[in-house]
Image (tube, rainbow, N blue to C red; front, side, top):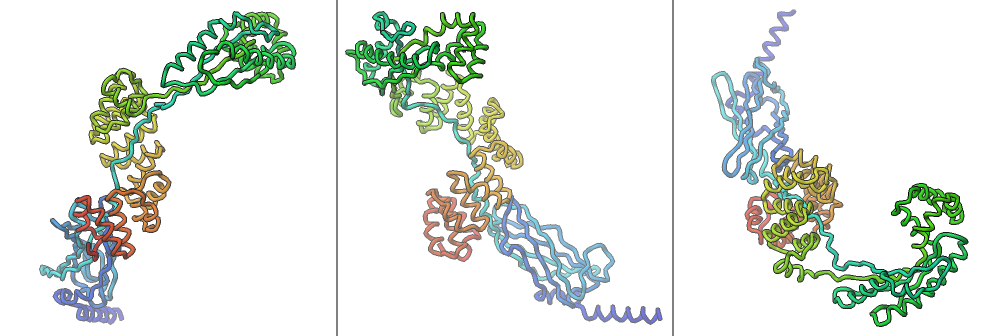
Length: 548
């Protein structure tokens, strides 16, 4: 019985061999072999081209005694790139390659190529040969896919590093004041107080303000107080009376000076002033007094507790309380700072008048990078300005002088989120995406989020890029690109708000994907103001089939 089975098996194998194509016939029958590629149009992602190729061998095609070598080859303008061949064997071959049945079989493989310029216009083909003993027969070449999409490479890669802002104030607000002092429980203004140094200095300052065209008094005030001792209601009345007498005194002392009518307030007991004077004093028990003030809010309780400290209270009566029996004469002043034009003139003719904030401000006004560099160096040399140091390093980065920028940022606070972000941009320029991404995620600033979006695009994580960039202000180009790469074309269209030729190129891609030939043409006409974009469009698979 076993002999009969062996005989039948041998007959069956012989019949199979007869039914299957010879190596020569495999070449002739190659048109019956079906090939599929996903994606059908190749795409460059993170510097590589990856695809899945499926080959279906029909029944009776694959000879059981042969080895088939299949070599994926990417043919492009300027050359070709080949992978290591995939090898398959028939059912009767004793080797370690993948077996393909004579009954027909689908074989799926991953193909991978490193991108080089020129691969935008390419095609993927399979080159095969049948090996039967010493015989080698070439199979017809199978074309698998056309073109390689490089749209992600349109990402703007410079990175965002914003200058540290200046604190220059176009208008500087300040106050100047004098004081009238009163005797205990009195609201009478003594003649000596009208001639006091405090009042004289106040009036002199009013005259200076009036004489200076850059300054002006915007409003005036009288604020009257009573020291926090004795009956609170009586002190409120005393404070009111002092506000009235101070108003009359104001009219006398400011006569002949340019002032507006004051607003008048009566505060009552001046606990706030009391606390301030105690904290600034050299009193032995000032911490104890301040603790009482923090523990009790009721004025009567506060005063009683402090009076119980008899030695302390004696010191307060001599040093603190007399200073609180007063009325303040206040002028609110505005100083109009140098205009932009004046700052530029001073930079040219009298730069020593510019303080740190003015130098940082004028640096933002000058156009030429060399001028900016000089101004930042002035701020560093004269004031040791760390913002000037940061901005100088950022300027080097913008000028493409990464080594100088890196050295500059290394001198600054390594924990500063802006510095961390800047170091991330340097890593981005070095294509060290791992280091760059870590820096951007750590920094967490608006600039860092925009920069993280760049890394995510360049490394093929388009969905996350679109999510990160959607809320970043002013990020028109890369956000639009992220929406295109995730096929969110309506969002991409809605996001466009700048006039850069590169953005019009992105709009042309959106139009092409939506089948809008007129949109392709009109947007490319604007984009072609950039000659490099015109050259790119000629080989861009996005515009295959469109005329422009």
